[in-house]
Image (cartoon, rainbow, N blue to C red):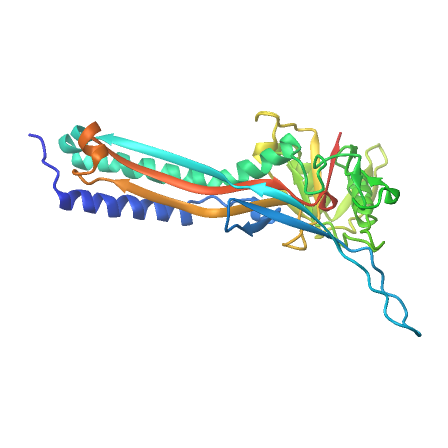
Length: 317
């Protein structure tokens, strides 16, 4: 015998699905990686404009005379939000004929959808890295022609990409190169590069470089070993999205980042509207009436972008 689903049943199903979605989204067993790498920026409009305040002034000794007024040059780069959706539907007769079983399937689908949203920002962030998106200075994130000072060509360019396998020596060289980068005022920008980002194929090597007590500098019959002076300096972040088995991924690349300033990083996650869940379960709803189908759908607005290229370097072996 079929079951006639009442309004009370649909209201209860609505509450059950929303609770399942929220529970899976807030405690779904997945720890996003992007908060370790990217700046989180809220958005209140269609797009955000990120000003790059170019400050070439230096502190000067004031012996006599008036102050020297240094003008600030403000450049801007815009990042436009994207809109996302994920929608599921159940035929009314399926719910009428098997309320308990269909509800169980619906809860499973909703929890799965919540997990997809939980992982989605990571996908966007790592796609920026793989596609070499445009940084805030208007140049590809990884490039040999980043301007030191966009308003002064005489200041020259810098590179944040080169060759070099993941070894203790090469990490030290990349660290030194990042620490020597200067701003328009001539002062160093990166005091302490602190994150090694790798695909799974390089995880073991990365953890040895970052966490081992000793480092082998010469893998010969008479190994040259030294105390690992950088032990504890780096957080290792392993991103499956960067693997060669994923679209545009590569097991050869590894990355060093300075993420100490949460407002100034190489990557940006920009959120306009968080994920919302809307259910159409009222039997008088036009969609239910016309299509004989119950709907629940999600919607969100956010995006990812490349940020400050001086906060990241890429090497390949």
